[in-house]
Length: 230
Image 1 (cartoon, rainbow, N blue to C red):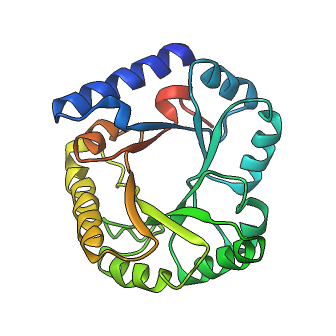
Image 2 (image 1 turned 45 degrees about the horizontal axis):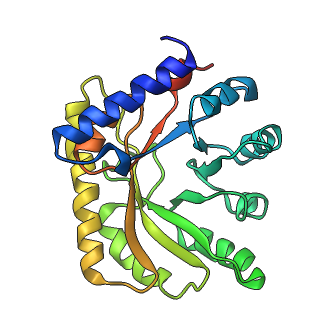
Image 3 (image 1 turned 90 degrees about the vertical axis):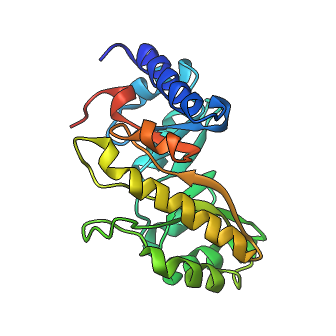
C-alpha cells in the first residue's frame, strides 16, 4: 500500500477503468471512504486527497468522528446495521442511511423525523446471497416491503444496498451485483410513490470493479484507501 493520497488516486483510477469498460462515465460513481477503526488524523489525509463522502458502520464512531472533523466539507453515510435504540442519535446527522431492513426500523425513523418535518434519505439493504451472517431483506421480500414503506411520509427511499460474500475471486459474486441491479429495475417498473432507484450501493475493496461493471454507483472502500485495520 502507498500513502493515503496515492491510494485514493489508485482507487479512483480503478473505478474509472471499470466504468469505461462497460461504457459508463466515471463521474457517475460516488466513492465512499469507509472509516471503521480509522483514526481522525488518517481520515483527514483522505479528505485532503479529495474524499468528500465518508461511511461509518457504527453510530458511536460516527458521532466521535463527526466531532473531530466538524470543520471539513464532507458528507456522512451510515453503512452498517442500525439498531432502533440508536436512531435518535443519528437520524438527522447523515446524508444517507444505507441499511434500512425492517418495518420496525422504518417506524423508528418516521417517529423521529415526522414531528420535525424532516425527510430521511435511505437505501434498503438486500441480502442477495442469503447469507445467514448478514443483515438485509431477502430479494423476494423487497417489493412488498417497499409497498409498505409508501405509507411512511418522512422516508425517502433512494435505492438499494448489498454486501456480497467475501471471496477470493470477485467474478464469483458478479451474479449478486447483477441481481441487485435487476431488482432495482423491477422496482422502478412498480412506480411506487416516494421510492426511487437512484443509487445502487454495492462493491467494497475486494470486489468494487465487478460491482461498477454491474451498475453500482456507490462503492464503499476502506482497506484499499486506509490499509488493513485492526
